[in-house]
Length: 236
Image 1 (tube, one colour):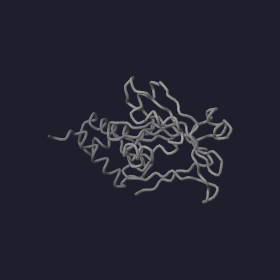
Image 2 (cartoon, helix red, strand yellow; image 1 turned 30 degrees about the vertical axis):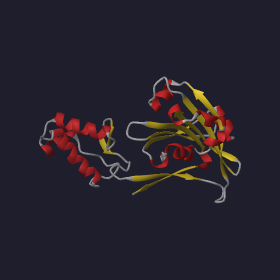
Image 3 (cartoon, one colour; image 1 turned 180 degrees about the vertical axis):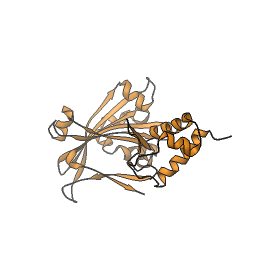
Image 4 (cartoon, one colour; image 1 turned 60 degrees about the vertical axis):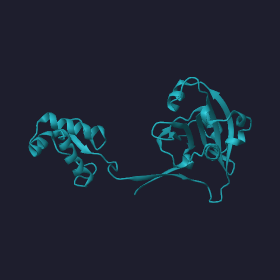
């Protein structure tokens, strides 16, 4: 099957971007330049450019044209959440604050489960030498929680260890999608548990973990104190 003209143009332009012919921040070709270069219609050029913009390779500035994005597009990178502790010998402990059954349509949608399934929220607090620095809410469907285990919260100090023992799930290496943002101001209860002011920012993360490309096993929301937060990004 023949490749559409706009796709040919897009592929050629993408190669120029990822090969380093254009540096991040460089002004990109104008529409008229591309029409002349590829001998195609303006409709073809505009569609190719729109897709490159929507995929993040280019960005538009009104009245000035399009520019190459400053991100590391086309380069694989490794993100590492760096634990910042006052000293290397920090005593890190996890405490299960609460386990509650909830009925929340938003969380149910995140977990992709039917209304006949129960949802459990595990609120856990991590401390370094007694100082709370990480608050996490893990949401699991009743498919992955044995009700008899709920009587003892200590069973869920490490949910990943329990999942491995009970179901042979290795969630640390399972596919996942994560989003990070700065939370400001910090929610009142979160600030109280982390022992900071609501006026202090926190790192807020959302993560969905999958058993395969479709089946969701957990949804997590977490908060980390700003003074314990650092992310390392390196090309690989």
